[in-house]
Length: 370
Image (cartoon, rainbow, N blue to C red; front, side, top):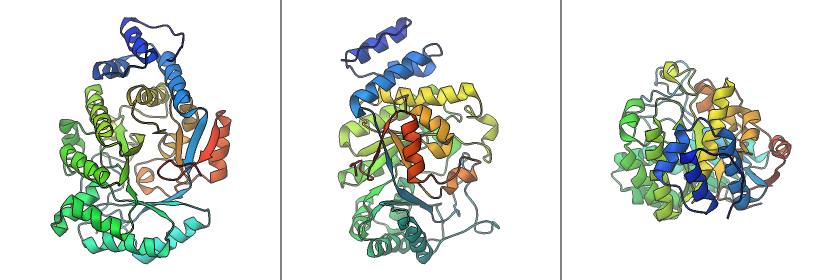
């Protein structure tokens, strides 16, 4: 039972009473919290209280390297500033040898995870993906390989004619450990069609994620928010994610990704620009609401490349308990106009977590403390 003295209006009163009685919030409660404009402090305080009851005062982080191996992509997502065509002057594709070289650079800072994703390059042969995992595993037998979104799994299934299960089976045999739950964006069907009509449907995303979890391949869960989505869309998305977690318990963490708009075709429709105090509050409130609603997630991750280190530190008092990773590079956010950098050293992350009055704890990809 959580005890917290807060002032509330009638609807919020019912919601907080549920929380204090350790009852799960329903979708009407979630919608009410998203719509609320008067109870920011109460929402934040309650989320912080719940997080402390789950994770005490600890904030975890991972020492990892992120590699985006190509920016050539045939998809036309309106929220993306990263995609290039093969004829673009600044298009690139890394060879497997170059990727191995970059991982070696990561070893100099002691990484224990490599995260590998890229654009959907139509010229790639499926063997590129399978061989990439195989070569990484051969060169780095102890490294955790976190690779390929559900979109990439879908493309591999289409090109090979293999089922999702068979694709995962080959990837696991070659050394894959887990996968990012990206390509989710917003799972509400109509809005999804508007912002990324070429991407896999929400139903396919769900089927691929459930297949991965069934085969003991854990994944993260994500949402892209602050673009053209409605609060009803957010409820649809989070309800679906929560139901999957109830069924599979296969998500390691939830990551909320604020939309970075500056170099995208949606830039004139952006709802949340982190350069204003009001919108920073919206981001912090959203993190807090995730903690209140996602009762079956132990880990809620903040996103310092999207919101900056300063706001990420503030979010640690709003229900988040994970600071993410060192990354070393993160081309997708940068290409969309993100300006908070691509690398934080382990010592920087530790200092930032301590500045929030929290205890930094290094973890692996599956949230085992190191």
